[in-house]
Image (cartoon, rainbow over all chains, first blue to last red; front, side, top):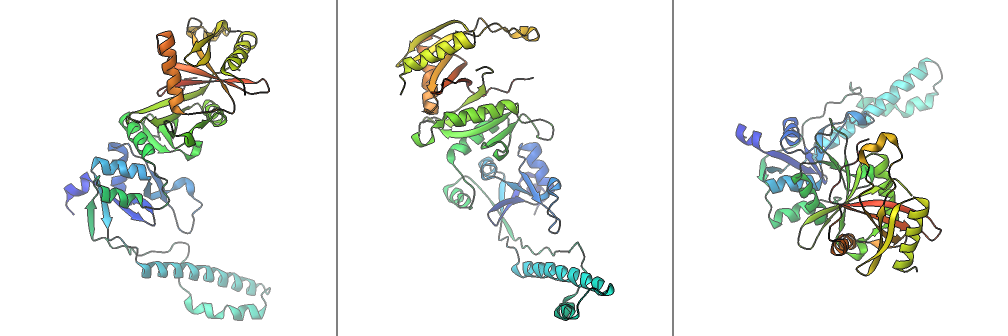
Length: 266
Length: 117
């Protein structure tokens, strides 16, 4: 891979229906050049409770991915396949580790004279699998990467990307996402406040978010806004000092917004 | 089910006698009735910079159980523009419940950043 290629493009991998980026320099570039933040999702496999300190890989939403595809800077790592053999070894390592811990505990109990003999015998066959691993296990890099493919906005690729399971994609949300990007907002997932997107005026590390965006249709009866929801969202937005914004797309393709806030009386 | 005129009457009474608004009137706007008026001048001395008592606000009475689409909200803005000659930056939804409660929520056309406070 040439240096030029490496510096101008974003390589993504789609593994287990997740859109992932593994290279730190690409994550920086996404943040600095494209205003795309994503969600860091990597953790220590044996200490997954450290949720405040997640690292690579960066996980992207389907909207972030399609936005990059639209810009024409997105390369898909093809033929990336997690080596099943490697995965089995990893799982075996984990199991052996648990067994090792148990045996150490049994030995300790035995030293204190608490352990019963039959329990010791039951665990005898585990001893042959003993290894030196403790908390950290070295995992071999078992992925095979042979090629990258430029993703462009054509129907085949769109269909392929939209077939990634679990991403609740709608065209309306994508149009609104693009419009918000055009207006220079930094966008994060909206689940925290019950919307579709959260908008920051700049890097989320430096600014509080200002908008909660909920996307809806213009005139589809099934998607009409319930006034009770409007009151819920309006009041929530007021109490967290954010504007609650309904985004919608008219039939002529124009994206517009309605901002809801509590009037402050009544 | 209350008619648009009856709803407007409820919002009118609430604004005049509970929230002490000035110059409140019920006007016909397209097929619906809306209420227009001015909020009372701010009594808070710290807040005298944004005295908005000259600005007329448009209140759209709606029953709690109604569902509104974005198209309906757009058409309200357009109907007010047609009647009053000026498209307001925001409308106020006066949401009425049958138990006598009325709550007010602003709806701005476009993205409005949260107020600094």
